[in-house]
Image: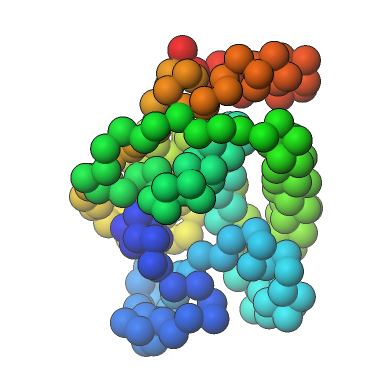
Length: 197
């Protein structure tokens, strides 16, 4: 669980599992388990992977973002600086410029992807959905919900050593904040601004 949430190098299905080659025996049912994460693009663009997941009947934990504006700003920062928004010992990031058309495309695409995978997996698999934001608001509570749902031990986890470089001040995040606010206030996505002071 620790690596799944915090380790950016945690394996995807097509990467050798290394120390997870032999699934651990856990839970009262003495059942083997192994975990991996797959991003939307990995699954959406790989029909073979989609079929494999369907055939195996995996239990699905679907992590989604509540605020797609903040997600897009993080992605832009990563592209511009080459650094994650949550790496250790990273100085506070400078604002990034946002292209309105690309932002709109990203939000619409992500909303469709979230709904697409929700429709596929929520009805055909053991399925739990939770948000990135809810986990970081109350990690102990969400972790307990996850481990109960998965029927695996609720291991004590250390706090992440990662540091956020993002802030809740719009002008410190977005170089053209006035332009973005003017656009987004006229859309159904205006509530994304509530995360900023």
